Amino acid sequence: MTADLYLKNGRVVTEEDVFPGGVLVSGEKIVEIVHGDKAVQAETIVDLQGKILMPGIVDGHAHFNQPGREIWEGYQTGTMAAAAGGVTTVLEMPLNSTPPTINRKELTHKREVVANKAVVDYAQWGGFVTNNLSDLDDLHADGVIGFKAFASNSGVDFARVDEDMLYAGLLKMASLGNLIGLHAEDDFVTQYLGEQMQKAGRTDRASWCESRPGKSELEAIKRACFISKVTGGNLHIVHVSIAEGIKAIDRFKQEGARVTSETCPHYLFFEQSDFERIGPAAKCAPPIRTREEREELWDCVLAGLVDIIGSDHSPCTWSEKEKGLDNIWKAWGGISGIQTMLPALISEGVHKRNLPWQALAKMLAANPARRFGVYPQKGGIWPGADADLVVVDPERQWTLTTDQLFYKNKHSAYTGYSFKGAVESTYVRGCQVYHDGKIVVSPGYGKLLRRLSNCQVS
Image (cartoon, rainbow, N blue to C red; front, side, top):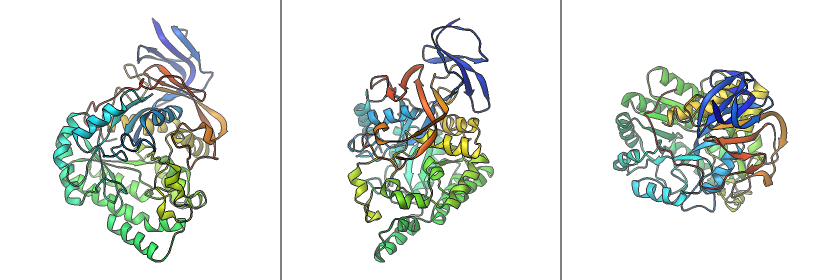
């Protein structure tokens, strides 16, 4: 057999194992997994020299803001940053584009605008807001991979849902086989505490954290999981920042609820003192937690309780951030992090806490592919899957500088931090799209994906 591409002499990572070997690719697909240093005919042979070869990341949570807020980020720069971070499939959120993607008309418009922009493959979330329940069937028929909803104020033109609407939406998910991805913070508590902080003249960075305590997140998680349990609807809790939230989701899962958890690299990388020092670039909701809470969250990751890790890449212009340098309430909340997600997790997880590579492959690729309905085309290294692959130098030590960022707005909370572990090359459907600091394909290589299957609970 003669393959198109043979990536050989690597350490192959799957969700079950790590072993010396390689991967054979023909066309856009993986055709064989090679154990050991087998001699195989191929048009192109790349000797990985013992580096890590892992499945491309399926990032289930990214905001590219197109159409309407392209000045913050667009599909071209966003997917370039994704490729540089080992992300081969981006599942993009319905906000902060404007108008948001909450009906068939806006989904069609988005797809027309972003066509021929991406360098990696992509799919879209639909939006679930207070008055669009009747639009969900059309969005599902058009292949959205989920429906994003907010229990708290989103901060943009995207209305939150009350519990009656969440109940109705989850009933619909039970029949459609799709899911709701919920931002779970108690709106009444966070609004009240925020108002009290500002009335008291608090403008310091710690006041943002104090206004959104973990207990308000936990309460919203528990209520939503209960509704998932009684309706039978698929629920995914996005960007969980506290261990108690992960554990609560796991308990409901054991009781039969069709619910899964997601956390983000910034909750595992930073602690509150970092946020207070960095400032607006690290402002997000839920906020960065204390060192103790971060370590408790890591314990959940290491115990296998976290289903998915997503970047929650949420960029904006620096002008939207610098408004909050002296008053944190004025800064836009969101962290630019899709490019640094994998290096951050390798540094903090694999090297510092002995997180198995297999666990990374599961949380970053296999589980999101299953949960969001793009499996088995995406999500892993197996014959028949798209040849979405990442070559990682696990020992390379480097420091992030702004000139390395592919974002439209070159700022990030991670700038100036050092990492151990670097993405060397990224392949999408067998084609190298990123190598050694450069994007090596033209915009438009990335393909639109649609949900292929019903949700699977991890």
